[in-house]
Structure formats: C-alpha cells, structure tokens
Length: 165
Image (cartoon, rainbow, N blue to C red; front, side, top):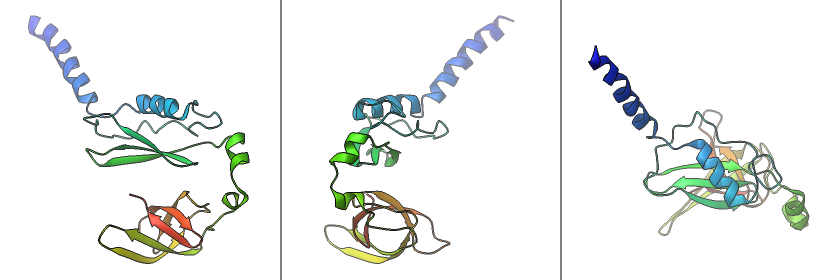
C-alpha cells in the first residue's frame, strides 16, 4: 500500500515535465503585449490571444519577436524553425500617420500576382492568386491553384508578393 502513495506524486512530477515540453501560449501572449506596449484587444495590441491548442516545442533560448509590418508580429524560435504571426489590431494613431498610398490596397482578393523568392545566389518567380486584400508590407495568404496549400507572402509592390521567410 505505501508504494501506491508514492506513485501518485511521482506520476504528477512526470506529467509536469511532459507539459513543459511545449511553449506556454499565455506566456507568449504576455511577451507580445510587452513588445507592443498594448494588451490583447486594445488598439495597437494583438487582436486575439494565441491559440492554446498550438503545440510549439519549447524554444531552447528565448523566442524572437519582430514587427513584420503594421498588422502582425512575428513570434519565432530560430533554433527550432517554428514561427507564428500574431495579428495586431490597428489603432487610430497608426492609421492617421500612414500615407494615403499605404491606405489603398495594392493587392485585391483573387488578383493574379507574381510571387518572388529571393535568395543571395538566385531568384525564382511564379504566378499565384491573392486570397485577401493587402497593402504594401502586409502579409497575405496566396496559392498557385485551388488545390495547392496556402503560403504567406508579403506584398512588396502592386501585383507582386515575396515569400515570407
């Protein structure tokens, strides 16, 4: 009987160790809020919390947060290769400071585009179709055919997108 009393605490320790193999999305939310200086749902903050169902392997070092443009923050772990885009809710101040050209959509939904992949030693381009409207600098989903998987690409010019790295 005493062995059973010890088994439960030991199993709970193993269970805690297994749970820590993944990143805590609530902690990632807090880091994004600090990075943006705004809470979730506030103007200038994340639109919504990061999905708690995501099972991102725990990053051996700290995660990297970077502004992709004015509509998303990139949260990534360079050591493991995972990355997620956290949509940002635009505030009144951010919209008023943008130029008129930035307010206009450079790419419209269902518009044929040229996707460019640039690397130091080569460049590839091919035709894709925009799945959302986008301004220059925005990340939008694109696909080459109805059956192909969605790719996230940054709008670089009117009618042109670059593959997100």
